[in-house]
Image 1 (cartoon, helix red, strand yellow):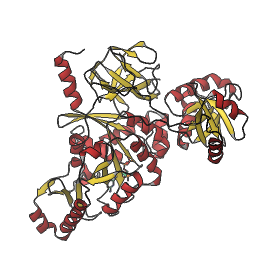
Image 2 (cartoon, rainbow, N blue to C red):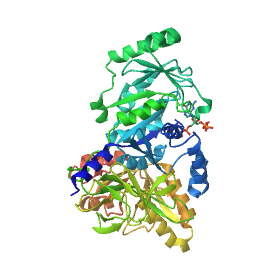
Image 3 (tube, rainbow, N blue to C red):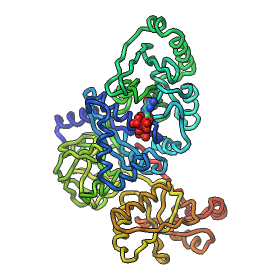
Image 4 (cartoon, rainbow, N blue to C red):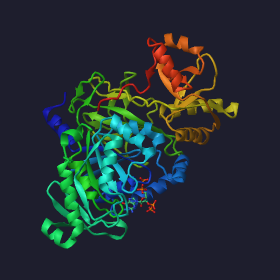
Length: 532
Ligand code: G4P
């Protein structure tokens, strides 16, 4: 047990941590906002640095070249910076629905999320899935309506859309003065003050802010200020006020309006991350018992990434610290194997750039380099054993058969398959008594593209992927599998952990089998939604 002084220290360090992820549709402004957070936190002197770094990084890796080509981010990165005497851990998520599973895993390591919406576009159908994933995790979500410096939709109509489509009740904390495209500033609904913004060239430095009382604002801003006041009155009438209890339960969402490009409203949002988002708190183990923050070190792996830099064939496992103090070099226990694991090579990551990390506290993320025995969902602990809940997979919807083009490259193919499955790029399913070619399963088509690109470029095993007619999977058992093996439009395969998956061509056929044979074991793949 830690001494009282250490306990106090760990509790205080955890209370200073804010660990959150930004989720958004590609192009909604996630990168710009991230960069502006760094600007406001003083972590970069001038906006533009992150993109420059990103550019350098991308130049070093094949598969990141693919990201650049498509203008999407596939690899999640972790940024850590200090702000107002707090430590902010920002977990990046891929901004594409095809990588929802990756987002889902990253969210398991976050204590809150910021959802960025483009005010002109609102919620776009392709992104709905990402937000649903967020809802499924019951994370506290804050909303940022971005690009208000450009013509866009009425914010009130966006509030309706958020509530209807995601089921989150938006509670605006700030409300814009001026229409989209003529953005003057925001009213802070908590105290009624008006904050007027001024532009700087391309937002490379902080936007000057002026605090005005209502009377002066009305005088200087005229009708647009009155209109904003009226809308605020309407919001108060319908009870759309900040409510911490429902926010922390993932039911309501404090909303901010701004423009990441011009920096308008960025400070309000970053302050809200500190003031409203929860600090790292005790995590429940598999039995639902919280492990208190001051117990010895514990954490779980939520992401694995190999070959981030092809020049050094490396392998990084990302550990979210849940309790205790992490010290580089300490030896911990790897939960699943009960073997000791030495943490000699620990790093904090800024994009793909690394600094050695010496200590970390609950809420922090540690990159364990060359930890090839670790898998997603594994728990690591010191002293008192603990197992955190597994991170469930999302139900795959696409299934393709993978064949290596050159059979001489079979060894490389197997190695690549093993590695990419371990990273969760795709799920690999096999037929133990039949077809030797594995079936790879994914949530989105782009997962296949990354899979095949990486197999070819990192492992030297070019493959052909041929689609199969299956569209839905259910977890099953041996008894039911016996019945299913001969059935029309069904195939039974096994996953790496030996669970049996039954693939069905038609959801209607599946529904029919379910109703005809209620005693058969046909479980939804995403059965459990883990508690935070
Ligand atoms: P992402 O990470 O979510 O994909 O979006 P990113 O920040 O890269 O932003 C996408 C585009 O939207 C960029 O323009 C960016 O400058 C612009 N943008 C972001 N926030 C705002 C905003 O508040 N207002 C306006 N008007 N634009 C915004 P781009 O032309 O693709 O790139 P760039 O040449 O400006 O860098």
